[in-house]
Length: 118
Image 1 (cartoon, rainbow, N blue to C red):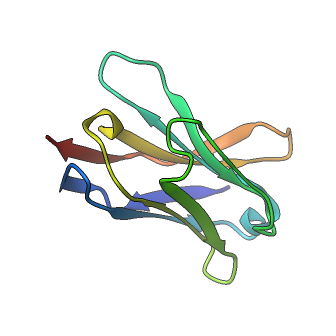
Image 2: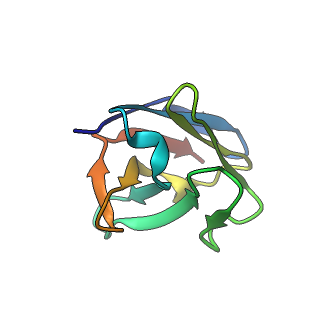
């Protein structure tokens, strides 16, 4: 069983930066690609970024391209999301997820709130 725990959220001002962390437990977790998603109030959950199991390949949503960097440390079973030049529209609950054997995002964290004040 894989468990994901996010941390690093909080209140930041427009233009600020933050770094989210997602620590995973489970002996197979380093085998899978991981991703970050977010859900703003009244909106559907949306993709933010993903990273391959080796870390060599990353993808970003257009809305964060150039402002976000996803990385991973497999020795620590941890994935990070750094975001810069934050905007009020980045306000959301951010979720970490991991692919599983089915090739879909099977495992999800509980989420961490990010609020960007204008």
